[in-house]
Length: 212
Length: 212
Image (cartoon, rainbow over all chains, first blue to last red; front, side, top):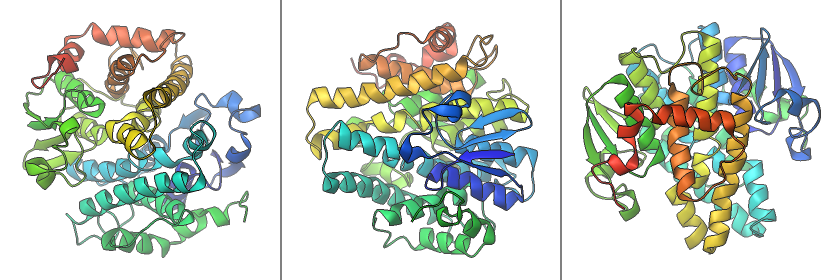
């Protein structure tokens, strides 16, 4: 497998965690998003949406982090990243989408660039935007976790796709000094994940293309 | 089943289509998002993320439209809304997420409200934002569809979850006069969907809470 990704991309980070949890080896191919490498050169030629991550496996190319994680879970079922029952699966997917559809899309690099370049926002307004959506989204996430308080991770006693989404979002939010107070279940799940080697090894600072 | 939803919500529209395609009856419970009913009153009390759609089934509550559609596909497998092979499933999920994670989150009502109330954007700037993300996202969607040009719908010869996402996004974009030119595969899939009763009946103007 080859993973085209960027050390600082949350969506890439999700897939790196999933690959590590599955014990799947992969070739790390860096795409420097901040320098625009996703829109030019060899990556743009193979990527229809010009977004990272992109996974190459068995002659096929896969895009969109959650679709990739579901694919990995189907071709390599152990350890499972989704529960086996439809209700549990729906819970984990909803938690994942609470981050991947409600928080992260508002705060990725191209959106922040639009705020600055097109809307002429200053740093305070841009950071206020960022923190607003992280805070609102995390409060909603916490309310969902609070419905099932016995879990160690986001859902149950083993990491799932929801944890693959949560951890990068916390990392990203911490870079922007977001407020993670008053989120006891969320931060307990985050801390539990960070005890695991699969999450540690996937973090941005451990990537080959990491920058200070 | 009970579906808490709003006629104009794209994410609600996705689930209405899926329920219709599956032939599942449901009670329509309107939540007037524009009046803030999702944040107060009975809906807020049962909805941890205070978002529509919310599906009640068999004593459980389900949130997030794609998680709900996957749940429906698991409990009622026919007709399938995802292919049976992992590669095909990944393609349909990626197409769905190209809309649900890359376009729609930037353009929903709470985001537009933030642009106007917090960032003090005028109508032109707000509409420019809206159209920019729809256009960029739809061009990326078209490039993905172009990889598999023989399909009638977004993927293959029967509607899938990707079509459940595409049609509401086109409806939404048309309300804001977005540019859908030069998207032959995308618009052919849209037109094919709109030939089907399941899509017709789900559209905003046919909802009990529809407004002009």
